[in-house]
Length: 255
Image (cartoon, rainbow, N blue to C red; front, side):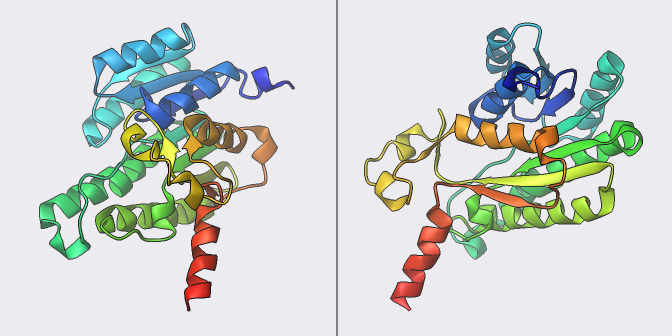
């Protein structure tokens, strides 16, 4: 097996796959031989994603938080390919900075829907449609904020911590046929974060001396989706240049 056929013949869905980390994962999967359906809300971004890997990436417009849209997407992929081998729950994000109790209740609830309930509904849909019968792998994209809460990102930290727990619960319930793992990216440069991650002082806070790139995350996702990770499930893998460990050591010195 070569790097170009690690996912040969596999069928994947990547939510929020038209840009940033999701797009990098979709492209890595396509390059490894998979047929990849990407979801998103921007027709322009979806078209560009499909054009980046013609014949390998299929765009499907829809809201990753809408249960009916989730069901329709899964049904369309099943009609086209007859199975779903890989689900990447990448859609999610920070909706508003602020302390947890300063967030309006409805915004906190929306944050939880976006970062926890949406992945739950996607996992449930692909399980009943395909994976209960044929097996597969689910990869959730979390954040180091879910491992180490960040001030002024309270709602997001809670949502991602809950996603980490969901990963572990599903890994216990869906094995042995389905592996469920999670990636927790650290500071990662994308189009959406470029204004922040380009700050020169940030690299110095990372033990490996640089912020992450979307391809750092896609490489981890490709490994977890492949047979090479066949005995790995229920894990939350921090891909962060060591910043969580570095912060813990710093806190220890301050204590």
